[in-house]
Length: 285
Image 1: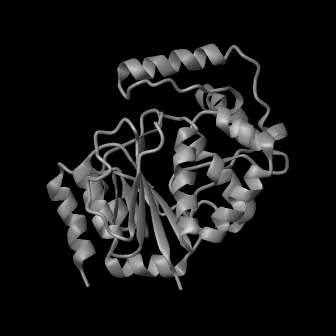
Image 2 (image 1 turned 180 degrees about the vertical axis):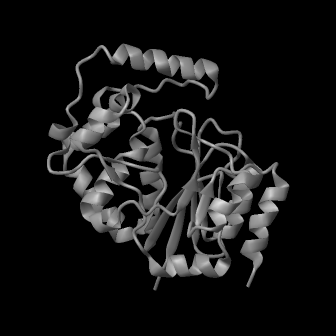
Image 3 (image 1 turned 135 degrees about the vertical axis):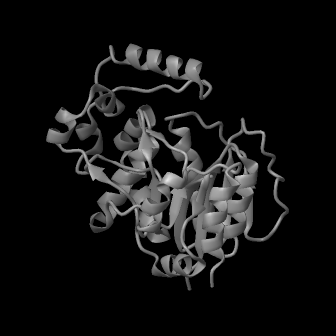
């Protein structure tokens, strides 16, 4: 019998997180990790058997702590008997009907995006992309503002002067991949991938040292386990600027509604008119 679990990393917009959690609790167990720096209390929702809220890690942008917190939740879910895992951020919402959502869960398909980094692609990408995989990254406790971005840029420039990391040597017969950080996979797929990764000390050491590892660690490990299901992420994200996700607006409606996406990121609770569009679709029988 299918037993879905939803893994959520969150740090802000409590009203939206409450909306998302309420929707997901209708279908399975919800595991939430709140950044220790978040003002949202662990008690922001009343206790119930299929809701688990934790504050264990201080999450830093582009840092291994993102992966740590995700694995923390996934391991909890697997230990509780979950058969299907969906990893989401706290500003995500389902963008399909309840019927479509149930069909998605019943299928228990392995959905994730994993784009293999070939020698040709690597050579043709810009310097910032290349440095994600060839240079060390240390995330200080910087804020998500101009000063924080400046601090991270200076840190990257400093580490660009250090010897390069050899990802091919570190990964062995695994192919380095990158892709959207959000995924839905069978619990068995997750478990096999994590066991495989932990059995390779050089791989774990490599990803712990590199930038935005939450968009490459899981993708690399999942593709090694189940390659045919690569590049099928079911979360809609509109990337703008330097890899920053845009907020969902009315301009995104057609692209979302004409697709088979299950989730979309990122929403904000203040946009009530837009949220009502998806709430109406969700409420349909």
